[in-house]
Image (tube, rainbow, N blue to C red; front, side, top):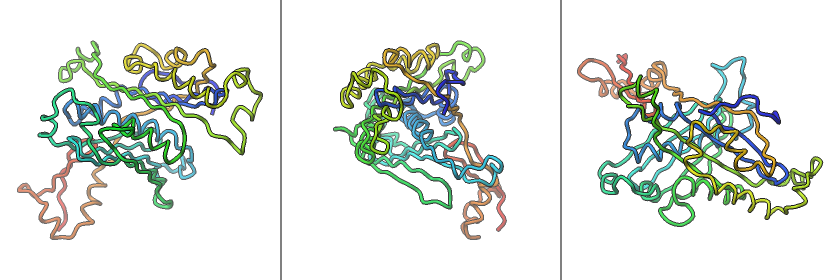
Length: 337
């Protein structure tokens, strides 16, 4: 990966960075039109959109971290398996199911299921932890049919260290990978005056999301990263624990409005946080809303049912009506029975 950033725009990207001589790596996620497109397709209540938006930030962050692209063959994109990172929650809360996934390279989609009565009982300003309740969060890496899936599971709680999506994700890294990790997620509606003129339906209010993650680097072959190159003076100033605490405190100072501000560039935000320690920014990874559903896929799915089952699905107009849960696109199929 290039040591200098060659592509930096301020929406719909994941920006990797490192503070190399403090043994810390990180990712900055900024999502605008992509996350707004996904959330507005369903017209969820705001509380549901907030939590699903956080899940989309996490899959953009974690999916882009998976480095093994051996299954990707650019010369034959239609036949090659697509690497996926899937985040799913199941819980007893008002929002009882969330599914969000990342498909290489940078395609995002997601949906949520919720109990409307429970949601109304909790009110408009309930904490995310109460909305999700107790259950589990599963994170899955799927590299295609020829390889085994890898899945990690961590509990979701409404109290303790596993509160909400960010708390559960932090706990996952601590338990399964033993990597000290800090994650901050931010979601809100942003008023866009230009959108207000062209889109009467949204009236200019559009969803934006931002996330920051830092991780303490592990040793490589018995050596720290800074020992594999000429050490900078900072590596003499801080030991491992001090360097992590120092960067952790800086990262905790970030505010939601900084992550969501469309005027504040990603580069400027990282410089604001870490300039004294020499932050190194890498190439931005583009993200977009994209669903893999298709009419052909629906037809293949129907072909897997028995003739009797297909017959039971037919409506009065002689067609089977199916709506994609991810993108809310409706399909009408006349099945062969």
